[in-house]
Amino acid sequence: MTTARILDGNALSTSVRAKLAERATALKSRGVDPCLAVILVGEDPASSVYVRNKVNACEKAGLRSLRDVYAADTDPAVVFARIAELNADPSVHGILVQLPLPKQFDSDAVLEAISPLKDVDGFHAENVGALMQGKPRFISCTPYGVMEMLKSEKVVMKGAEVVIVGRSNIVGKPMAMLLLQQSATVTICHSQTRDLKSHTLRADILVAAVGKAKMITGDMIKPGATVIDVGINRLPAEQGGKLCGDVDFESAKNVAGLITPVPGGVGPMTITMLLANTIEAAERTLET
Ligand code: NDP
Image (cartoon, rainbow, N blue to C red; front, side, top):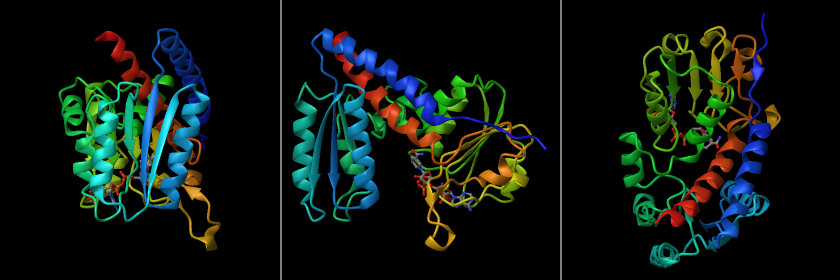
């Protein structure tokens, strides 16, 4: 029985963030103070934690951040007006609206209201289209982070069999596009896929982005595969209440060659790539 190497997202984040901090310093020396604006509507506890982590990460890397927090019953027109203001403000380089939004909001309309030049989450249709065409402007942060993790470990993507479980717009689909661009052979599985295991067992690189605790077990993994666990699930209190991924780490680590843990895997890299996208947006202002 082998034990997989652990792909440590915290360690990689630390080194990537150090380089981003250098780029932030270089920008400031040229008169550009990179700035991310974050909008939060409502009191969802998980969203509040995510926003706090993003703002803290900005500060640590030397980026300026703005945080607008609105009550859950805010009229969408107020938020649209604020987005328009931030779009027009040259001192703001990235804009992020934390999802999910309360029910009176049309989330797609909100995301489309953000200037595609400041859409550091990469959710705007224009940026999704650019990614499809192989000319990405902003890559959504989680898939971007996964690509950096694979590159950091020199995982061979060209010709590799990749299976992605999950087809969301924010993880599964952009992940597939990025791996396709690296000449992997990509299969996307979802809730209607028949015999999931027959697919996952073929994967040289397996990406789990489902949102179901420990659903990928060791017997579903090809020996030596690289396993990327995007899932973040909280176990019920009677099972300890801890965070866990979509992969059953205990059984998977005996089969995989390389595996990301949860927590400490993809999660920290997601925030890191948000900083990277903001820095890139700020650097682009010097090119025009
Ligand atoms: P979504 O709920 O949007 O998508 C889940 C996907 O999983 C869907 O495509 C769904 O299929 C598929 N699915 C559901 N059940 C099964 C099943 N039994 N077999 C195969 N596929 C299935 O989730 P997200 O993509 O937004 O997030 C996925 C996970 O990643 C969550 O745990 C989330 O918390 C986490 N996450 C982590 C991030 C990080 O920074 N690490 C960032 C973003 C998300 P269908 O389309 O048919 O419904």
